[in-house]
Length: 114
Image (spheres, helix red, strand yellow):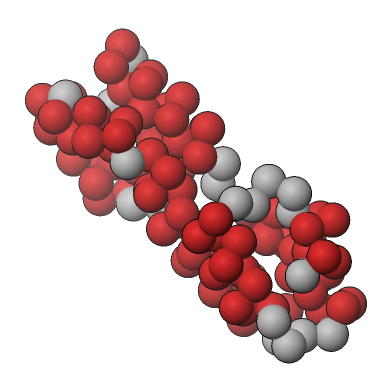
């Protein structure tokens, strides 16, 4: 796992365990290729937090578009973040939103690298 931590030092907790399970028995070169592509596509939880905060004063739902949830993004856009309640929920759960998007991304990248 040290080979991936060199390329992905920002991983913590649940995301690190998930990535470790994916590349556990891969050779070093394949794991490094995965880590490089995954890092480029990974959604940062701080970005999700920032775009959720923008929903209070600007355009609601940006965080949903970034995480690939276009339908929810459109719904948030037209309902002011479901009257700000959905935006508040996303503010509390911004790390979970990022992890779910990153989980999907990791699976896609794993399929590409294999």
